[in-house]
Length: 534
Image (tube, rainbow, N blue to C red; front, side, top):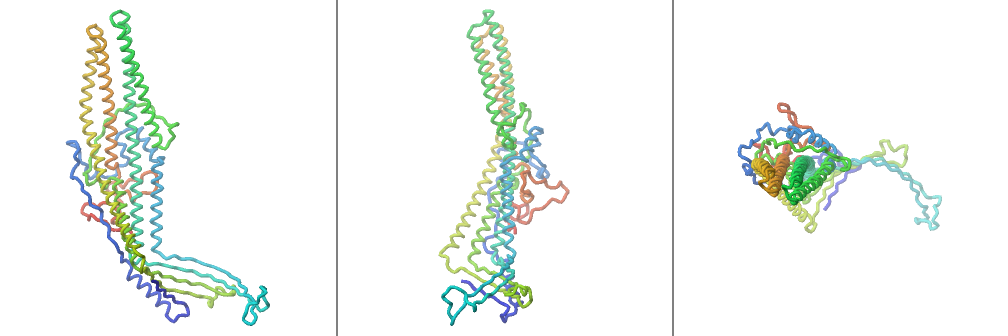
């Protein structure tokens, strides 16, 4: 059904009255947004972390402020330099930065629907009519002397505007704004993931450097043991089998030292990709791991919803899906279009811009769909199902985030206990090796005892080095699981660059506040739901 009311210059109704009626109708109906208002999906939040070690410090309010690069807590200049390179050149982050800029442009595109579309047209036409004889066109195909030539020149401007009667435009803008915020959270999550992966890979590489030093020292020790056995064999107090066993043990240690280089090279190549450099031109000099995990203040579990960008992204996608329901419902209602056109039209070009050549038209148009055989109902059902899907994704993301934190807490807690015991095991193994070696020199035990003691000591030291590396990897994983230094306010500070936006102002300065409803989680004392961000 379509109703079209057009007023031309020759009509009797006054032009001002028509415009006033249309504007009043639009103002009366504007703001009648249909569809559900968005509320953040509820999810179960534990009161505390189960795997937190006893005495673990809970973060104070001041700990929540953005303190800049989180990796600086490790006081490692090499790691700091690598993270700076990553923040400038990582190509995965660059992809998400481009996606954010695209989402930001889509918001501007959606907002343009609030305003009328104005076009300017100009045309010129020259037409020759065929000659007529007795009211009939001559059949010769040529134009007789009675044929006429006419000119037509036209210059006009047209404007059309569709008032947002049922909130379709505002919901589209809100959906795109939520999409922009979600893209900002995705960008932050890409940064955090790459930064955390770099730190974990770096500490794994340094752990391999520690193990390499241990292997090199072990080779030197086994060489001395072989020399001792050869001397005893030359003196006739050791069997030939002792020499062969000492050679076998030395060669096995040499092979292990060479094999350790494979894993180190692979970690080095992975770091090269993360910092945006070719693996063929990138190298890191060996440096054994010499660090212990720093204390990481823990936020309460409820704060995790504000500190994890992947949770914020999932919540913003649910908000955008909710707006799509309103957009689908708005299709049930009629649309009102206001159009106007004005300009000059004349058959004489020199008289085109004179007053008698003026013309104008203005009028509203109301259109509604009567029958669509279930199309709008199916679209609405699809929008509701998409919203339910995004809500489930949000809740699953929250569950996975808590699992991530608990996994790293458990790892740090257990490894912290294990490394104490392993250090004692190393000391015991070294003492046993020294005793057995002296006994072998005295001839009271055979070489098999020395071999077993050396193997035990080597395995204990290698295990200790491995645990130390695992602790640092878990420490970086915990910081990453807690969101690094990110919070939801940064979604509105993104500039579309690879590097993170500038930190918030220091305490005491006026920090920028997010627009009402722009944060994906409710603040303390605020309602749990959110309003649309137009």
